[in-house]
Length: 423
Image (tube, rainbow, N blue to C red; front, side):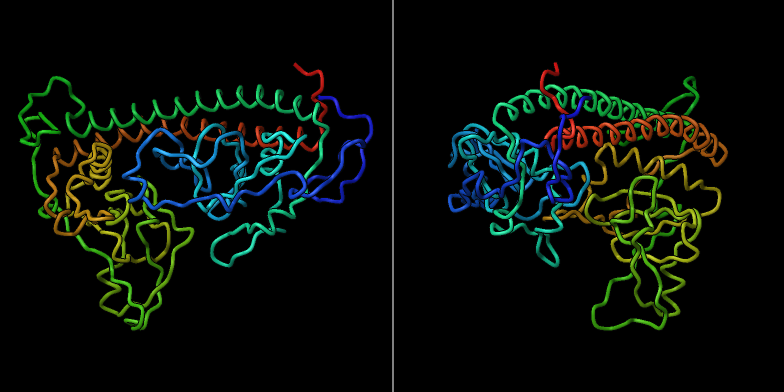
């Protein structure tokens, strides 16, 4: 795209050069801060105020209630809890109409001559390293917010930029949405293929019998139904100790957050102390299934010796199968259980669900003989690998589109491209 004829230095690194007739000014001269009018409501307070008006937090709408404290068009930017340092994530947005704001988002009313969408776009391009404080939680104070330097763009050009970006980002967002829909459809198809294979087998002509499990229905007549405790050994990881080292061996261990479906993330494992006997009990070995005990319960992966040596903490179950059972088959079976919501239905849930060892041991499994288990695994590996490859490529395409969207906004609001006269 074309550029402006003449540029000048802005003296701001993230902005670079700007068109010669543009200027730099501080946010406090472009907006009025209305933070004093914010009113936070707890989840319990909101539960008795359900209604039609949006309730905003640091990153957008988090609820709908029966009242509002603002009416108009305003710029909201996170005070804390916003993704200030996450690429392609917005920290500012425009809120319109009647709405409520809590104390985690600053609220700004633009002054005469400044369009809210242009201010929001610029705030999403700012390098926040100069303005953010807080050792544990990133926080943008009101004082620092006021000092942010932005570009003072002539109003008629602001309107042109808003129109241009509105049209272009809508096109990009539509393409991203269609690619995300493709991913959703592929994941649905993947779940259906796995469910069919691990509950009905690969032979459509095989005789069937009632499994006695309502949500599974009929299964091949020659398949067996057994509780997991009869075909495997189950171990819940070691309880973390704050005071006692608990042993003489400092070793890496896995937590529930390291476990996702089919994949174990060892990039951020922690270490704790184990005794000699605990090294035997809690060590994970090749082909053990690892199951998350808390949070999004039931997530399961298979240990493929990602590390030379690793152990488990008490938010992870270890399942070691007996001879003539294929662990990968049961990984696919557990994936089916998880997608159907079975694990959530059996957990001890007060505020956070916990899949206890007692509950997990009583889970009924269905399975054929070892050779058929292996045949099902081979079939599913081929089918899911093909689908995962397409899903991975589509995710990458979405990331590229998001990067392009971010770059296009930055180029437009900093004057690197001249959008005047662009249709």
